[in-house]
Image (tube, rainbow over all chains, first blue to last red; front, side):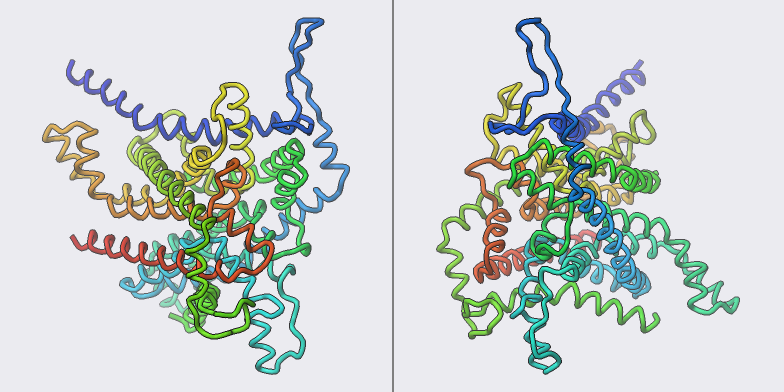
Length: 301
Length: 263
């Protein structure tokens, strides 16, 4: 009897632990997508809020009618601005992910192979910039890349160039900003898997006469795929919708969908089109997000 | 370690830190034109503290940061307990997806969806009557919780569970055990999770811009509107102050972590 009582009390206790985070995320993360979907079928009007209601009451017939307007999606297809922005965002995200991987992998490996006592300090050094304001760190690059910025001053001072280079508001600046901001997201999951790797495998490979590069390709790299996938998704998915970096560093050089959505929403005040843009972005990102989720739940088990 | 790895680590570190140092150096530049060195001066710091708008925005951001970090830490700890201690249960996958998806969700999507939720709720329920600190806080708790879990969950999983079992065996209930045994042990992780959530909230521009209303301009919103138009040297000073504050807070947390580990 007491065992039964204790069991039911425990179950109640579990409910108290589980429900608050579940309900919160359900209500404020999952449910909102339904409203984005709903408003993407609405029409922009000059009112507050600036969209037409989806459900209309018809007093003559006494029925409520739902009017789904698909023209926001038609608009996304007709105007090739959107398609180009989606494709370019995917391209920028993919290229940035590869660059982050190429820079981040050796860094993560270097930390994982450092003396155990020094690793925490190195990790803190990687995380520290991430803990300071992203907005401010991106802003710092404006001062570096401007016409009269640090890079141009140094290069001209050294006599390497006569005229200042145009660095800011270019595709180059976009990539610098994105790689800079997202590099820690790549390094940390890579470090997590590399640090756990059994070094006796490396010793075995070396003892059997494998050259370092062969050992790397056949042991280290394949054993770190989970870290590569996790890091790549942590970079790729948010970069597709990135707004701050293209807004500050790209000028008109790089068309990105996050900025398009922002403009539709805040400048054009066309909330239904902005919602449609968001829905399509979500659909595009569904597969990468599912890959990421799979990875996460595998790690948790 | 091969020399190549060492070199790439230090070049990478330089890449991460040079912009921050440049910013700090230029915050002491007396010249109005950001890039020309006009001599050492703390002029822009004085300017900063006379600027009512900046002080007000900083105060709003500080409040939102404290509320959001606290809320996210509570929810994140509960969610971590679910993920680490509850084993397999029906809906575990949904739960785990729901609490980790905000990590990667582009901010513009989170922002627009929360705003549309708030507006619909206002139409049908009359709440929230206006958007501002409360709606931004709700939005920030939502995405910060995922980051809290990233920090707290591994710590909880690594923890020696025999202490909890001992407490249960001695007759303490699960809630008592959690408060008196588990929480003190993971306290350092809680501190860093809270701080991370605070910084993420304090720094957020995109989600706050969507979910804010008239009268609630956060510090990042103000900074963004300033630097979009022109370079403003006072932003350098502000940035330096933020970086230094965060640096000091982090050092304290790290020292706390170290002490906790030694004990």
